[in-house]
Image (cartoon, rainbow, N blue to C red; front, side, top):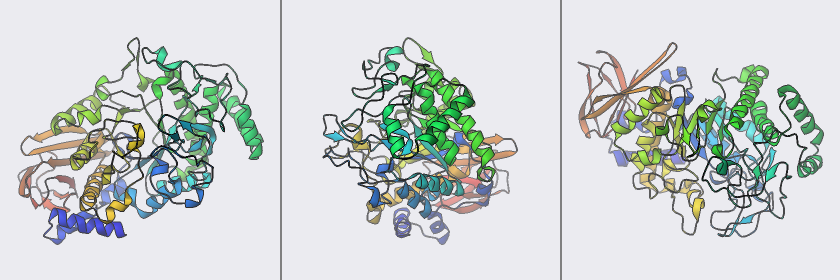
Length: 557
């Protein structure tokens, strides 16, 4: 509540509101229509967070595993956990941001030891160094925490996307032996010169590569057998594996063990999606099979838990094909081979070039993305971002264009991925941090207690995010420019009996402004500007507004 009040007061100072109607705009308003709005993955507003760096909800698990060696800057566990995400969910933080899907870094148990990467010791705080796919890392929380998170998110209409790693295990340390040689390779290191040299190799030194190309039957790794017996669940795990392989007919190859273990998070908790890591470092048929396994698990969950079914959406998968961009349409080019990952298990791919294309002007950016998504990529989508956990060249690393970044991210066709802290300008340049670590500082919650600009930015993200969440047309609809100066455009979306239309104006003058709504809203229609919360009537194909804002977000009341 304290942060909300601070946000409101800061917003009033910034925007210079002079009337009670505009004061009401400072907290996003959810219209009645939004409760009837279907959730459309192609227009999702996704919040991406590193569990360890977002919110420490349970300090008692901070040292539950002895990971206490001195580390490089931001290369150890910092205390964030699933309980912290639940706290912010309970507070309404994600709802107020218009977030309708949360993507978290992997929850699975990480290696217990550390590796020295030349910058001091590093632990697997980021979640990508798996020790045991069947367990939630104790530093992140418990399976009960994860169950509570999914249920509470679903109650608020928010989907949960977990992160799937099949390509590799965690590094080998004095506490973490390598998986057997029939499970992983430990050399050679990838040279990234051809399709083969992206796949049959390790990404870096000491990152064992799962033999995902193999269909040979292999036994369970001895270290997992020993671990599960100590934890009293060996018989249960083996019985579940037997049932899985009998049902699917897959060989007991490493990739299928891992697919079973990852699909359990669907069967057991009802998660809605996977973001899949290091996609181009395995053969594409691996992901086609993974999608089949996920789809079956999602179907099984819905049959067993009809009261928990949110809608008829399929299980969603979005792939990290590092370097893919929307302009490549459905192909990723390795140089000696082109691969269509959309035809191999993915509905969406992360769009790695958006942070460059965000430098374009609004109309060129919006029309390009709309044309590609409505034509070449019809039925598929991309996930856009301006910053992320492993892209050292974000759109605005120095946080000098924070409002522009939010506007372009949240209004561009496709899925929007808000990286934790984008909405309050968390610094991406941390003194002493090397490589990706500088992008992964702890969430800067304290800044909201004194920083007026960051409170203004948070409100900007709330207003745009809520509008986007209420209107699938923003991300999934057809874009059409109405006027170039002032810059006004429409988005329209139709699916079955659902129709959605909005009109948006950007870079408008403060004070009085006349906005053409084209043929989107008929004369006499009462519409609302979701940015100022003012209501107006359409006359002669236009509306007149007098606000201190340069943005209008028009929706039918």
